[in-house]
Image 1 (cartoon, helix red, strand yellow):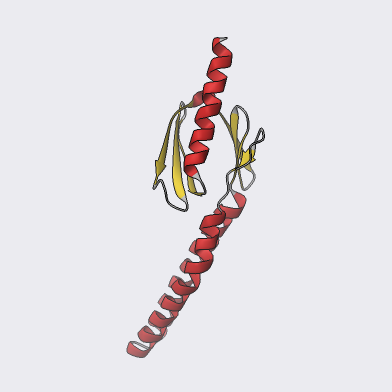
Image 2: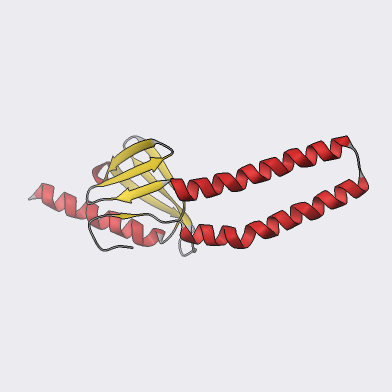
Length: 147
């Protein structure tokens, strides 16, 4: 985490986890395909296994796309969220609750309660530090308004 005026939430630990886990998942799928083709050879097995394999590939590609293309930039007073051409800005003043699912894990989910509803960030690194950083900057903004 950078100590400057802004930084980007990272998902490197989730990508590292994917590199370790995906080969095992693909191996298990290949073993299942082999067993099913031995037990029940035919067009139905081939078509259904191809469809399931396609969905497995889409799921993995979706995770990687989210990890790489979903950018959350924390500035002094706002969060800028970018994903596949769309952009959203949330002011720290609008955040009234921050919840972390799975604190202490290598990566976790963070849910922000805002005036407009919930905003969820999946697979983020150092969620407790990010929560602390946001709360510190919220307090700074409140103290500036009070002065």
